[in-house]
Image (tube, rainbow, N blue to C red; front, side, top):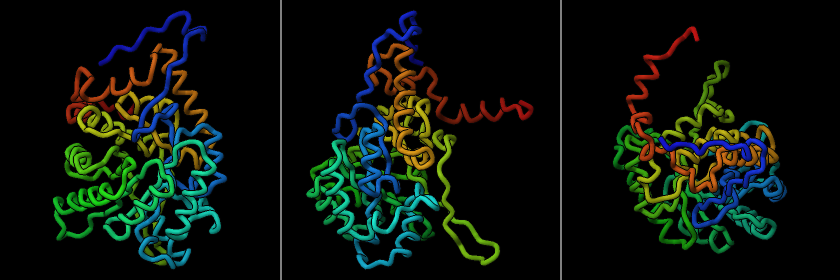
Amino acid sequence: MTTEPMMTESTATGREDRTDLTTTYLGLTLPHPIMASSSPLTGNVESLLSLQEAGAAAVVLPSLFEEQVEHEAMAYGTLLESGAAFNAEAYDGYFPDLDDYNTGAEEYLDLLNAAKQELSIPVIASLNGTSKGGWTYYASELENEGADALELNIYHVAADPDETSAQVEDRYLRLVEEVKTEINIPLAVKIGPFFSSPANMARRLASAGADALVLFNRFYQPDINLETLDVLPDLDLSTAAEMRLVLRWVAIMHGRVDADIAATTGVHDGHGAVKLVLAGANVAMLASALLHHGPGHIHTVVSEMERWFTEREYSSLGQARGSVSQVSVADPSTFERANYMRTLTSYDHHG
């Protein structure tokens, strides 16, 4: 494991130079790695400006859903119901008013245009779906409206028992290839963790054209109302514990996949963001933490990160990134099965 720089008297007294938190993501140079992920908070210009004022390095707009592209006249209630199934960061009571939320492709383009006019930080558009549909056309439209990059959120639940894992993976790869051919701006691909070989799939996505991978999408989990027997979407904000899955795969993929890595889900404080950088992430995206604490929480997270790195005399984020990834640690098995066995055998239920 990489040895951390020793603390000195100047560090303890606060006279040291601050760590340079500059990072790069999708070809963008950012002042620090903390971004606002796709959520209702990025769905209107007023809240986007609040996120920028709070210090967000960049923002990802809510997704333009495949269903919106194909059905412009979809009713508002139906949109929210299907949208909740696709966006696990949505939360009951956090949906913005109808006038503030995009209800179709044209409204989405208007939001992007307004965001680019009002914000000085990078604005990343997002497309969400499972098939080609109108994606290739609107990917180009989003670029024309000034999006600095595009996040492709492929939400596909492999529920068909006749669809093989190879067919599922090919679906992802074809989508990435199709969209990449239509745009000149960088492309990020947001995926879930449920591939049989996530690291291999990550490499294939990068080869298909993904400039970055966003780990991970939170698939919604349905619930059953025992009174009405209705199947309902049940969405909760993420917890910090959920970051551990992301942490493992960021650490495994760093240095092995030719793409930037964005960590999302479970990023709630500066210490969590530090861990993700040490594991190899270029950026850390917040959604649930901002919905819970408000946009001002970004400043708190960045300050915690800067304090941690500065106290340990890191000169830059680049010096720290990936220093605790699987390719860097003395015992790579800490991210694999050996650590799983040690964890179970050493657990003390009385502790």
